Image (cartoon, rainbow, N blue to C red; front, side, top):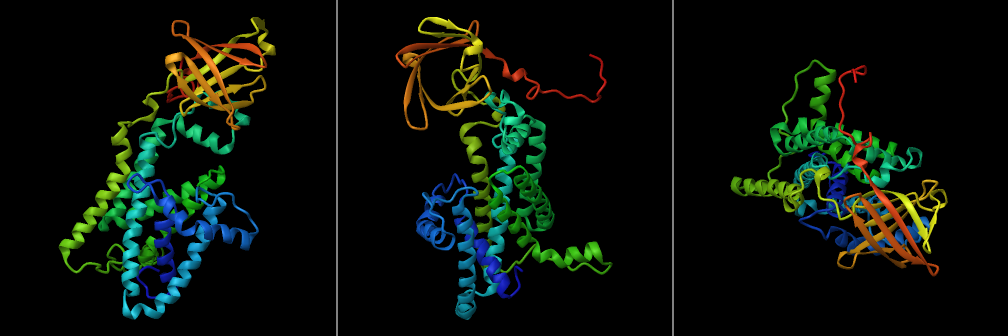
Length: 409
């Protein structure tokens, strides 16, 4: 437990410190963390995967729920045990167990507050659970994977994102300040338990990282265990606590206040910077790229001859906001291509996963919302003409609310 002079608490402290440093997260102020992790652990991850588990990794970079991620966590745990053994032998000459525990505890509080604040703002500003793309909305429900189905369902509700995001933001601020830390950690634990349950239940690929944050919240709650137990299960007096292990790292109060203010400032800047930089405080209203949307094919010509729509291999096509051109077949199968624009020559360049490019000449008529794509294939000229669909009027994304189920029409 933090603050207790024991081997288990030292291992826990060292493990969480290593996890904070090396488990990759997308930081704006420090975007090189994944490169640092790869520099120190890349080769070791590959050797461990092959030698211990018989897995040959093509890429040892650590990303969400990859084999590399799980092996990194295993290595960090092993290193934490090793360093704790060494620390037990030499600590009399340097940092004490109490100092180590206090340092990790404080860093853990700020780190957890940062994660909750950042994920909370991601929800409040609709950056995490974004509005579903048109191609998702026109995919039959049974063909959508559970993770995308959950993501898209939550993305349709702005109010739910505001509520859940605000809860995480409030928990983050409560954790930062010592007087409200217990309440913040309890709220953070409840939120992370819920998030981890969702990740496992819907097969969302941040299971390992959400488990790490959940365990970190438990670690940070351990100084309060006796107090919580007595509050809920006994009638005895509740011992006072100081908001966690509060061993002084700096003897001068000015230096202590300075570093605390610096850490709070860094947490705030890291969390708010992306939104201030781009001025995007509601992703539902953010600018979409040129021609973005869904198009229902109403005319198909091959070599100048019109083809019956029932015989057309494409019934809809979509321009995705992240630079993809997606075709939907008659059986609702989807085929996506990377997309780049050459608006000066009215060209769209699509690239498949074998890096083969196809140039499509487009014409768009805003008056009747018709988009035509012309291209050559097998020595023939093809043209698809689609009418733009008003996908924002679909029931899934319409902003409706009813107090009663039998309201008159």
